[in-house]
Image (cartoon, rainbow, N blue to C red):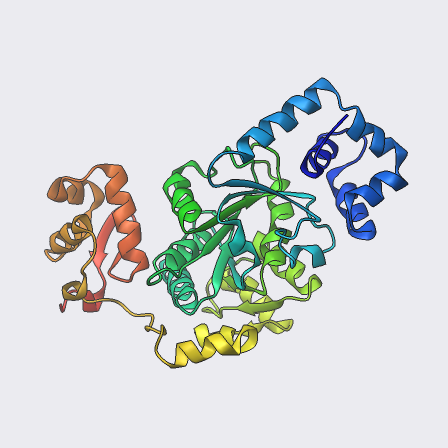
Length: 371
C-alpha cells in the first residue's frame, strides 16, 4: 500500500498499537519514521494495514490540511520547530492554523492566572506589545486572563510585527473558550494557532498540563504574571526549567494570593522582571538595542482620553465615562452598543490603561479624566 510520510505519522497517531507519548519518545530516540518501522514490525503492520476507522480519520485530517492557512508538520520535516525536538516528549504531529514559519522564530511564553487582576491584564498586554514591537514573538495558551491579554498586546504591535502563537488543548476545529473565536482568528491572521491533538478533540482537564510543555518548549523563556501556588502556570515554569529555558516572574504585593506563585519562582531561581529590557538582555541582546533605541518601551501607565485615536466605538465609551462611573447597562444605553461589542471594547480599553471595569461598572483611570 502506498502512503506518504505524513500518512504514516497520522496512521500511527490513530493506531491502538502505540500511545502518542511512546511514539514521541521512540521517534526522538531513532530520529525518523523509517528507522522506527524497520525496528518495530508491529508498527510497520499498523501503517501498512490500518483499519477503516483509522483511514477515515487520517483522510479527514489530510483534507483539513489541504485548506488555506492549515498545515500538518511531522517530527522529521525541516519545517518542524527545532526547539520542540529538544524536549522530552516532542509531539509527532503538529496541526497549525496560520503561518507555520513563526514557530521557528524567537519567542517568549507569557502565562498566568485566568482570574488575574486589572494590573495583571494591563502588564501582560504592555509586555506583549513592547516585546513584539522589538521582534520577539509572544506565545501563550488562548485562555482568559493573562494569556488573552498577552496575545492581544502582541497583536497590537506596530507595523508587520506582533506575531503571536497560541498553543491549544483541543483539536483545531474547536475554539476554547468560545468567546475567544475573534482572538483566534486574529492570531491565525498575524501568527499561528497550534495543537498536537487530532481534529475533534474536545477540551479535557488532562490536556492542559500536556499542552503546557509545548508552550515552554516552543519558547526561549517563560514569563509568569500573577499565579497562585497551585496554578497551571507553575507547571509551565517547571517544564521550562526542565527544558533548560529561562524563567522570569513578575513580583506582586505580599497580600495578593496571585503573587505567591511568582514569589515562589523568584525564591527558586527565576529572574525578577520590571520591564521588557530585563527579558531581552537575557534572551536576545540584539533586540535589546531596538528597545534602547526607542522602537518600543512605552511606559505602563494610564492614558489620556485626548490621546486616544482608535476605534470610534471606544471613543464613544470614553466620552460617556467622562461624566463619571457608569454601570454596564447604563453605559450600553449611552453608547447604543450591543452587550457583546461593549464588553469587547471595555476589555480593550482596560488593557490599554484608559479605564477600570469591575463589579459591573466602568470608570476612567485617574489621569485619563485630566485629558
